[in-house]
Image 1 (spheres, rainbow, N blue to C red):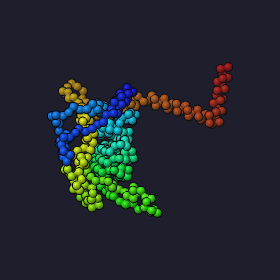
Image 2 (image 1 turned 30 degrees about the vertical axis):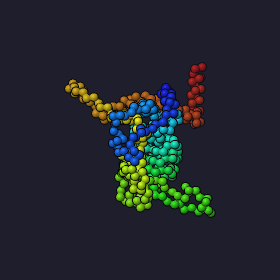
Image 3 (image 1 turned 120 degrees about the vertical axis):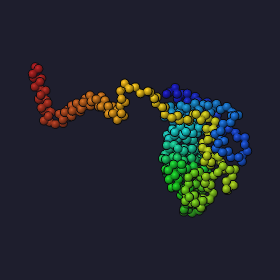
Image 4 (image 1 turned 90 degrees about the vertical axis):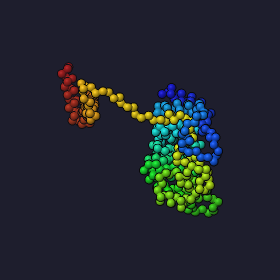
Length: 349
């Protein structure tokens, strides 16, 4: 494992001066590509960059180093950490420990959709990454209103929020409507000049795009009435209803972290299915297969037989210890023991 850590450290040093940049799109700026164009393979595709190949190799063996990632995460630059985070999410390895180990204050997007991240990890990242402008918490069953409240409180530049996708996340999104509404705080000071901007306002003031594919009608009407600047589920078009250009991060058909791993081979995070058990022809002379319940029973019997001598030895030790304590603490017992010892010495003499 030490050798593997040294290799990772060398790889981190080589990647520290390399940036991961998405491929240039020759189309005009006003064109917003569809989801199919993001995943279609072009005949004139350029060869992958060296840093992308290194990240692909690292991602293939991510399960072997994920437990010690906190020890060498400091060697990686922020953009490489974000790429590792995206690969871990796709490999279904992302949790609080990995997220907090890789978090960087310079991040602007965070995609933890479908992961095992909880409110604790999300709160920690919200304190570290206060410059986040786009977050995806969809299909996160362990994220509640407490985690969303930490995001809203510590990320004043948040513009894009993705949520929903599973029953638990849908329930959390409905309960977070009050957190997303801009509001004014009631404060008492001698002069308004003594107040800070953050003290006066509250809520998701900078939120502009909300991606919630299965939003209910009541929630949609509430947000439309109290948050008119928020565009719900924007469609792929150059501009939304308010005249602002719809960013790619606000399109539900495109993963939030797509630009981070666009140049990395998708085989890196392909989770292969469980290997199929080989099917052999049934041998009529072979003994019948033991049921799983019988296997558990036999394993329990074998374990009891293996531990029986140890248990007997431990019981003898406890019995001798109890007898010794009784002799040392009881005066009558100590007198009898000393008398017996003296009689044995007299017999020997």
